[in-house]
Image 1 (cartoon, helix red, strand yellow):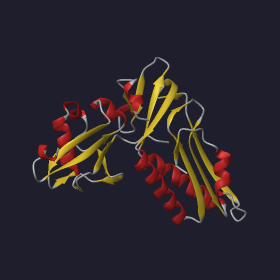
Image 2: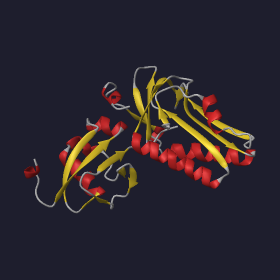
Image 3: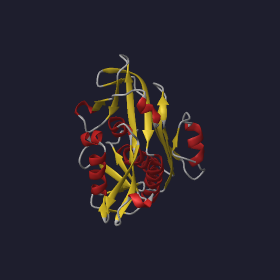
Image 4: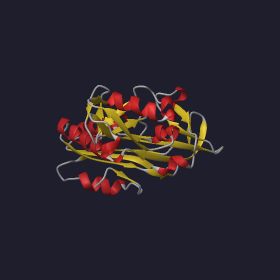
Length: 90
Length: 153
């Protein structure tokens, strides 16, 4: 399995919620990005992997391992990057 | 106890969880499901969340409130389908005096709406559905696949 991935790349799990999951058609997708990588790189990889994801904002609200993250934040192998639509609780 | 629950919210139990003989002021906020939005008749409402992050952020908000005022605060938010008129969110703040109880209660409900990753989907009397999105024109984005969206709630 590891042979499928070039050296110096890392795999992260992307989670999509609410309207984003609906428009992309999945709530979860794994992407492989060249290391080192940022949250923004993961969003870019998702958009290139999944055509339906191109209608998402280029810089959506994101979380890294359940904490709010900035586009320039570094990601580590095994991270969980979540794309969050505008919040509407309460 | 988790902040997010699929069960009906129990205001009395939440009051009991923060009440204390030294805290004579209890302020509560109960947000219930409205039957109208932007002039449309709402028949049902469903909440979904990023659970682990939502739990963590709720915990942080209560810590901030209890650091800022001498209070104890309880917070619960519903997940899944919530009927019209039912409570979707409840905050109870208990302090020695009303000033800090009101202030902490207000802080917690505002912070919850602004920071907790929860999303609301409305169904209307005509059968259509929409995502509530405060950044969208009119505050709503039409939903596309009523069945598929229920998978994660």
